[in-house]
Length: 189
Ligand code: SF4
Image 1 (cartoon, rainbow, N blue to C red):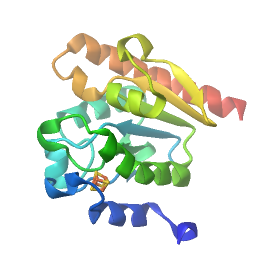
Image 2 (tube, helix red, strand yellow):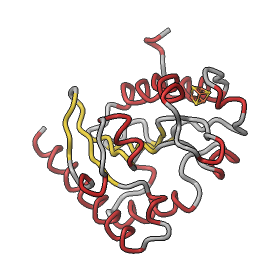
Image 3 (tube, rainbow, N blue to C red):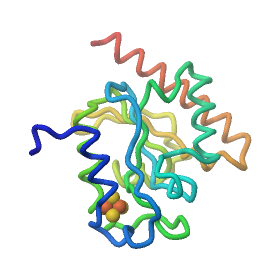
C-alpha cells in the first residue's frame, strides 16, 4: 500500500523490476542510496558499468569525483541521497530513451516524496532536460530553479569532469555553491 512505502520497499521493487527493456541487459538494477532525511538529493542519468556490476550508484571514477566535491564542500555521502532517473544501465552507456525514463519515473518520484529534500541537484544534461526541459548546461550550471514546489540546482555530471580538469574545478565550485544555497534556504525557514 502507498501509505507504507519506504525507501527499503522502493529498493526491493527496483531490484526486481521488469517494467522496461533495460531489465534484459542489466546485471543489477541500481536503486538510490543514502540518508532518508537528506537535505540534498543528487539525481544522475543512469548507472554505468561499475554501478551495474555492483548494484550501487556512483561507485566508479565519477563517483569519486562526486565524493571529492562533497568533501570539498564539507559534506559526505552520509549527509545526502544519490539516485538516477533510470535505475538500470542502458547498453554501452547510451542515453536512456523516453520510454525507459517514463517507465522508471515513479521510483524517482517516490524517493523524492519520502525524502522531501530542500534541494534536488540535477547532474548533467540528460537529467536537466528530462526533469526541467532544460538545455545547454554549460550556460545554466550553478543556477537554482523552482518548479512545482521543488527547488532544483543544476550542475554537470561528475563523469564529464574526469578528463577535464578545468571542468572539475567548476564542478567543485558548483557543489560549494549548492551547499551555500542550502544554508540560505534553511535560514529562511
Ligand atoms: S530502468 Fe527502471 S523501469 Fe526499467 S527495468 Fe530498470 S528499474 Fe524497471
